[in-house]
Length: 428
Image (tube, rainbow, N blue to C red; front, side):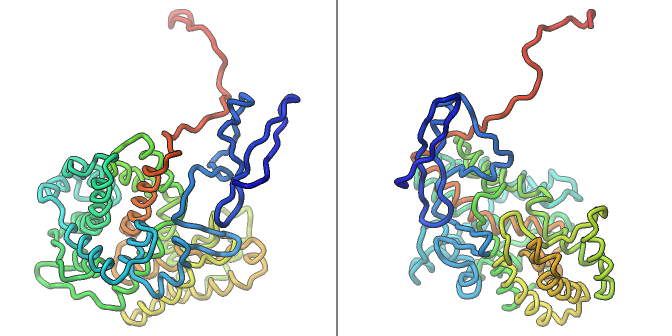
């Protein structure tokens, strides 16, 4: 709590409101007593100026291009850590010792199989169902299979549910892909890493096993790390809001997946890749740059700028190098990547983009990488959900443990009709 107060005067009545300090970042004004004191609410569409919770997980400074998980810069974690290590960090607050990491990895590995009856659940979907539609349904249905980990008041059940969600999400994601292409499901293997296991379950077929390439495994692991958590975004806030009602963790994560499905949230990398493909070749870039600058043209450059980052997205730096490594390893001479590199240089040097701070973001390169590996665009958001599950789970656990948490109940500025009397249908 800061020594300062914010003073608000309404109708001649003055009240002080405490100013609260975080460990880093902007101060916040505690307005919890505002309605009681004044009979008024604040008006904040999208809650862009409202801190909905207190959290020690992730910190973002959009102006400086900083992203920290439990204090560790995202660049260091992506280059030097592993996704399993980052999962442990987000869940427990500290990086694990070697023994702790081994035990945690073993626990997750031993939970990767799903109940065999769940396979039949998939067959209830149309064969051409979108993989995200399948993910929403199947993850929500997990609560029907794992009754022993739905009591949110039991810390041990919360721990087990957290591990189950992180462990089973790659299996469910791979099954959603297999179902969408009409191939048989592939079971997980305990001798493979988390990421290698997912790649094998996705791309292996009975006629030919898939041997995960270390370069591809490393690239996917980095993508998972870069998408693990991102503070109080729309899907994370959805998970917290659902959780505030006391809903079970599987239902809460399903709600997060549903929110992530929106094109303004999880579908951005697919949109960026489609844009690069539309441009096609480097020589057509000036035409599209001109269109992007024309305010009367509806065309927009996707993968540039960010709701939070007003500087270079720190995740994009890692993605740019990873894209180069993957394309070189796979021997891909993709004109889409040439377009991406040229567009990046223009965005970093053209006064129009610099002035508007339209820097490349993580979605700009991740779509190129995923496409090169072999994922269809409809799987991009599924992969986002897979990676973000650990962040959702960590945020949900933090919320449940917060003594200040209460059921979410945003207020409104009502602009509808005032009270009026009902008129019978024969008199209207």
